[in-house]
Length: 424
Image (tube, rainbow, N blue to C red; front, side):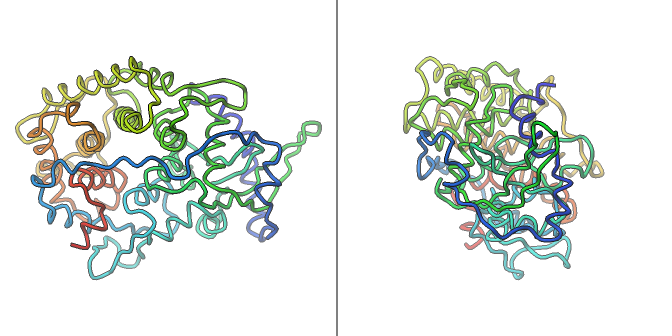
């Protein structure tokens, strides 16, 4: 499998004894903290990283066409409230939508489960930045953040076995992308667990329970050092271009050099509709590349022209596919998204939620000349909100990930944050 690439194979070799580590952690780990300078003293420190990632604001193109009150009512059903050990990948969707400062007053936000508390923005921030906080919640899981000799890596575990990846993320660099989109400084502290290593002679795994202090810069270094072009590129491209620009290239720990032109070509070679969420993260990554290139030139003129041409073609395709109710016909060859709840004629399907919301996300950031016609975007946004109106709170909770993309898209199209909208 292509997914079993060099990056993931190496990282998983380091983490293979994670289940054995659980017993050590359950009895309490060493409180000794190893400094970043001690752990990474032999690693390459020449990587130039921005302090603040490049921000990509929306121009609020639908601020006059979409009811802010309707969006507010929708957002008030997206307060993150689950059982304590929910899937980490679900929690990161909420974190990306709401950010680290969000609060969820009981008098405003609706619950599907009255006995479950809302995860505040600060709680989600702690979960993703501190191994101590993470292990208090996911006490039977391996840590999420591990240190290696040349950076911090985030555990990913795509799996077809339900529940087997509850404590891991499912896409490479998804956490780094979230930090970038929320504007986290590269000097923001992280606390990771020193990686499990193996004695090359005996083959015995040695378990380290030391907590290591690092920063998001070390997470960026881990992404760069273990980058291989066969991995999922969408989240990596978005995060690296925001943190590394104006640098156009980087070199991994194996001496392989990569450029934003090269990874853009790889994205452009992807068949339309192929990839996670019907291939739409590819379009979002391309849009981010263009917007970062507007600030710092990281792309060649030819690659920029090809990305613009591709996004224009996608916009014209959306115009052709839109039907009278504002939804779209499916892209031939794309992997459909299964509906987990009873099919009802007055419900918008999960597949349509994924398709519309992910398209609206990249459109909300795209230059005007690359978007579909204005009325197409308006009709799609209204179809999304109207189709979600009859969904129960229970159904919304079970489909939080795609609905968070809907909330993100609508807020971006209006040009306000979810908290700003909810406080109106």
